[in-house]
Structures are given as C-alpha cells and as structure tokens.
Length: 278
Image 1 (tube, one colour):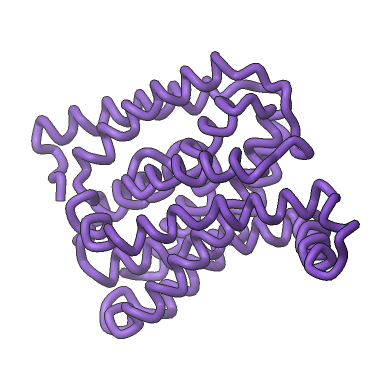
Image 2: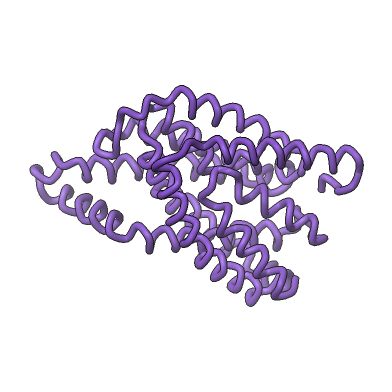
C-alpha cells in the first residue's frame, strides 16, 4: 500500500462510516479493486482500525452531548435524585445497547474476517438490507424523541446492530432502521447510531491493534494506517455534520436507491468475472 491508496481508503471510510451504505462494504470493494488480498490479516485489521478516525470525529462533534450524558451517569451513581433524570436512563441505555455487538463480534470473529469478506456477500447484503431500510423508513411514525429512549429500545437496536458485522448491511443502516421501527424520529435514531458506534468501533480498534500489530507493521504499515485514520477523522467530521442536517428534512430514500444500484452493479461485475469475489 502506498500513501495515495491510504488517503483514498481513509476518505472512503470517513464518507461512508455514518451514512447507511456500509463503510466496510465500500472499503472491501475498493481494497479489492486496488489489488489487495481482502482476507489478509493486515488488510482486515487496517479496515477495522481506520474506523476509529471517524469515531473520534463523532466524539468531537457530539462532545457537548457526550459530556452531558457521562456527567449524568456519574451523578446518578451518587444521587438518587439524579437517577430520575432522562440523561441517566439514556446513558445506561447506550451502555446496554453496546453489549450485544461486542459479544457477537468476539464469537464470530473468524467468520467475519474470512467467510463474510466475499464480495458476493457484500453485494447481497447491500440489496437485501435496502428492503429493510425502505420498510422502516415507510413504517416509522417518528413520534418518539431522545428523552423517550429506554434500555429496551437500545437493547433491541443493539441486537440489530450485530447484523452490521456482515459487510454490506451497514452498522448505521441497521441501527437507524431498528430505531425507526421503534418510532423514533430520524434525527434521534441518527444520533443513537452515532452513540452506539463509539464503544463498538473503538473496541474493534483496540482488539485489532492488540492482535494484529505485527501484521500491520510487516504488511500495510503503520504510517499508512495512521494516515488513513487521520483522513477518516477529517472527512468523517464533515460527513457527520452533513448527515444530521440532511436527515432532519429528508428520508433515507437516496441511500436506499444508491445501495441497490451499487449492489446490482457489483453482482454484474462478479457474474462476468470482471472482479473476483475474494
């Protein structure tokens, strides 16, 4: 991998991490087009690690909300009155909602990094989950807001988030769809998706750094990995700001259309052997 490829992949990650189009699916496609072995340990680790750049962009962008929620959680540990506040319940809801993907990710880590990396899986997931997104977008009443969030809501959303371990489904697409079916408004489900992404993606980054540091050093290289992470941070910050403004006034239809077109195009390329599945 050269520095230009690292910058390109970092930009792809930053743009797609929080849009409901699957950042892992996009990275897998671009990595394959660039000629990388998409099942190689250093490439799978690189793909997971550079997501942390977009996560830190979210932390910075939502810092006021995060500080408020974290402060409310600590206050609730010490005060019974503080435990009556919505932010205390919301903090616990995010914690509980983050648990399922951690468990499932560890149990199925090998399959996630090998079997599910096939571009046939990516193409199928892009199209199939578009149907789920379309249904959720159409069926949502959007009568509930952030203050209405309970542990049951985020636990359900967190369980659905596990499907995002399949490249092509999209973590944000899964969580947003589940949130809409819980009747939350689009801005709330988008922010919930952001909050749930923080422990999930940072946990994956820490695991990959711990397990694959040697493969990164001897493969794609730490300079390229850190460069891509920084680029994903910068681009991701802009993407987060844009998405929150966009969903306040629009449905997810443009993303659904894009996913179907990309999935269909990828299937044609695979069927004609223009690109290999692995």
